Structures are given as structure tokens and as C-alpha cells.
Image (cartoon, rainbow, N blue to C red; front, side, top):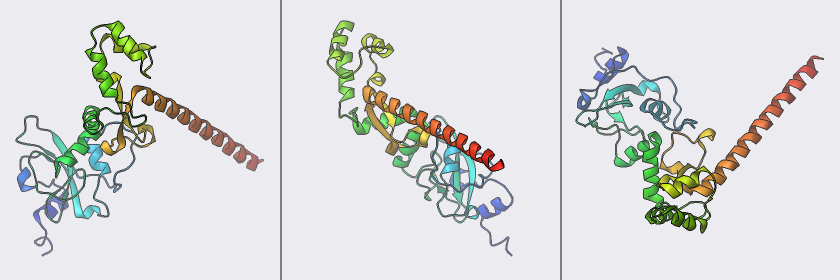
Length: 255
């Protein structure tokens, strides 16, 4: 009687078989996800994958008996790909990879909206993240307010290297070092502004969407990088000093 009362998706979970939503009948099978229930965990990995994303984005406040995690393959698209996604055991419906809310099954996407798709794209691709940052900031530095993209267009429009050098000398951009050669010979957008992680990757800001990205002109980004390096060095020094102190206390207690 208990078995007859289970839904098809619940029966599949009990038998350790992958759940397939009717609209995703062509999808591929996979094992269920791990036992971790941590949502949106800090990450020191720069770009995410479907597997890592699903692992760190689980339904908040929901126990694993309420959902199952499966791999499935898109259909009806030019480049099919495999996604790892959570499915409700009560309704059989997929949970959006980003907002983790139930949505109507789609054979071509694991997302409930274009906004959620864009959030994942920024976290999984540096190029996509940079494009989204430009669409929002238009190349204006968040730290100093300088329009770095405008400078790029001005420099690129100049015909000769000497003209470009003279124009750069009138800005706060450095005119010495390896980068200046590229700026003068063949200026690229990436030499003028950076899509910067507000919370640095090494401090848990990896695999993040647009909310953790900002535009920094190259000089401001270089300043921030130097400060981060100094802070990291100081943290390591303090950790080493604490470890030495702990060892001294340990051996002192043994004496």
C-alpha cells in the first residue's frame, strides 16, 4: 500500500534510478547528489561548473528526502550540454539552478528566467561576466569614476604609436612596463579596465555572479591587487607567528 501511494519520482528515488521529468524525456541519467545541504557557500574557485554549482546551491531549509539531484541533457539546441539539477520529489518539477525555485520543465534550459541564466553565466565564464559588467557600468571605474572604456576608444582611434603614447601620458595610466607596449602597438579593451571581484576569489568570492563584480580601471585594479597581496602576506605572517606561539606553549606545558 505504501508503494502504491508513492509518485513516479519517489519510486525512482527509492529504486536509486534517475528522475526524468516528462518534458525532459531525452535527458541522460546520473546518480543523486551528495549529502551536503550548504547553500551559496563561499568559494575560492574562479569559475564554476554545473556540478559544483548544483552542489553549493541546494534548496534552503529542505531535507534531501524532498528532492533528488540528477544529470540531464538539453535538447532542441545547437550545442546540447549536460546539466546537474535538483528535482522535487513531490511534484517532479525541476528547481532552478540559481534561485532554487520550482519552475516549468524546459528541454533547453535549467533556469526559470533569463535573469537566472545570466547569473549563472557570469559565475561560469569570465567573458560572460565581463560583458555583463560592461552592460551595467559602461567601462566607468567604480573606484575613481574614470571612464576607462572611453579612453580605450580614444587611444584605439589614434593612428600611430607616438600619438597613443602622448595621449596616455595625459592620463593616470602608467607609461612604463610591459603593458605600455601593448597599449601603443595594439590597444585592447582588456588593457584599459578589469572586471574585478569585489570580494577577492582567494577570500571566498569565486563562482560569483554580477553582484560581486565591478569595473576597475587598470591603475585602480593594480592598486587593489597590491593591497590584497600585502594583506595576504600579513595574514600568513600572523598565522605563522600564531603557530609558533602555540608550539611554544605546547612544549612549555610538557616541561
